[in-house]
Image (cartoon, rainbow over all chains, first blue to last red; front, side, top):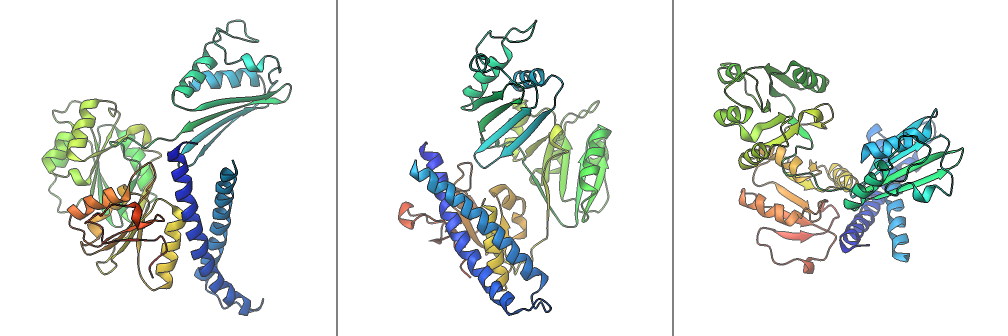
Length: 75
Length: 334
């Protein structure tokens, strides 16, 4: 693998770490609120639910990117 | 190259189906062509890209696929063929993605409630722009087919953008002359099939006008942005969509309004919406080898003073840059 590609992978890895940690914070605040809701009574706004869902999806995607980076390290 | 590969697959598909899939990442393009045809015998498969090798055809010269492979490898790409007899063939072409040329307009960003002029002698181009822009509420289009109509237009309307053809048949003026005459190079895009003409390209580069090839009109991404009030003075420029999402969520949570941009071009398109005191956070590595710190210097020369380099790298990695106020991390600072 050439140096440019390695730099890009490293940069993406660093980004993924920041993204996961920031979105995990955001999502966990909302998750705390969700835990206070009953099935019958939702106290969350539509926007909060949107943010929660987008955060979870993005976290999953970034985890996948990190896995690829780590697999490359093994090589 | 494309013909060579497609002929190869279509021929081996005989009465079956052919599927073409295109996958793009920041650094690669992968084209997968699959068929469910008769497949290629195992012993033949290693030879199919050999120059002069032909199989199962009466008239084949054996040049197509070998030429395609050669061209792909010249571009540092890869051509991989998988095949199983009676089951089908899969051809994968991997190419490195290169940065778009500087003359090329990749996408358009228009401000909400803007007026766009289209000047073209070809009615089909007016139709194409209508199709693209009519679905966007918040922009008005004015059509002209002759330069004199536009140059002598006395309407008091403020025109925000110009989409101008280069070759205007039976006219003395070409599109670039019209742009020059109106002094609207900063708001103009040259929409032309003459994008290969070096004279046109060099004139465009000189006056800072980007080119949209006519064939790209139906596909060019168009973004509509709100005019930012002067109080909303935070900007984040990063090519990573997820990172922009992080900053947008953090700003929303902190009760701040932020404008995020995926590229330098996107920010330049919206630059008039931001005053010079705008706090700009810019990523160092903006993809396609574009350095945020170099663009930051240009912004500083334009009068922006509050520029921060937002990077995952340690600040020791960078030399002193007087135009950068500080080097910060990628975490949103609010």
